[in-house]
Image (tube, rainbow, N blue to C red; front, side, top):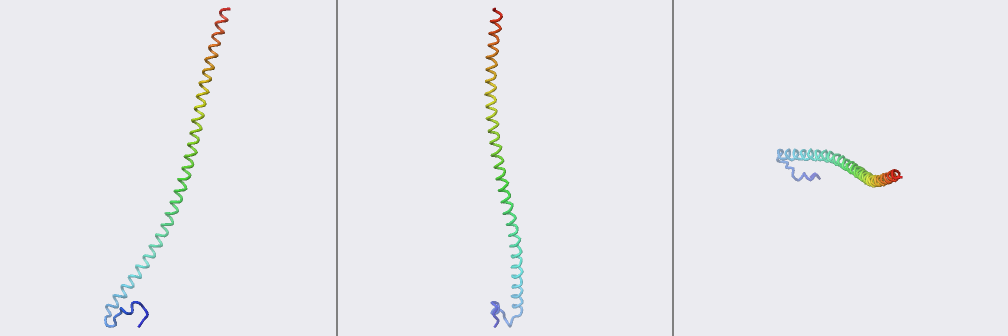
Length: 112
């Protein structure tokens, strides 16, 4: 007897059965090749998707860093705006004081 695992299934008296078995074996071989081909396709697709995920994560990291930089810049501009408003109020107060002094001088000059 042959050493094939299918040899015990082969019937010397039923050639139709033997042909059916051979046909089924060939079909299984074809399916196996198709599964290998699909597996290769999915492996390539998986690699591509992993690369896309890595690229997206890198873009997100850069975007987050850019957002943080913009937030710091906005904070600096807000601080500067607050300082300028404070300086403006001080200058206005000094100007009002100088106008008051000038009016007092004008009044005292007019009195003399």
